[in-house]
Length: 188
Image (cartoon, rainbow, N blue to C red; front, side):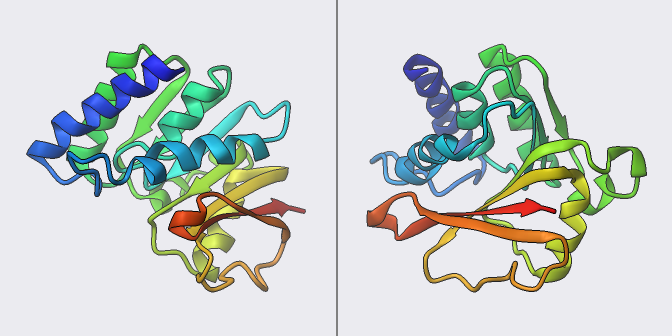
């Protein structure tokens, strides 16, 4: 896991020099958010999870570290920006990741096809502007009892409050120094 994560971070550094993928800088700031937080969050993934959809995958976090930590989980990464989607495809190729699909589209486009509804055990969201309406749409991707992971600041609003069919399961600290948390919701 450590060597695969190091390869991933190396790719991030190289591509980040050419285009702005993440806030990662040469002094390693940002590694906590991009690598450590997803590994801490992986502890909350239920046993038996088979499919993960990551919304706004950008530089690949939390999707890639989660996939590396749980290689048997199928992964869909959804990224609307073509250059970032190209980077994600390069990560998949370079790391030899299996059962991974990169969708170069907006998540709203993914939801236009009903056969994709209720396909995921887990949906992850980080660094995507989200509101109640968006959460109501994204829950369509989840199977019943599927989980939605929101990576956010401890100061963030409870945008999930009042979204039908989404139940709050808990909030878990990720990195104290970043004041970050993982909010876990479940589709009922």
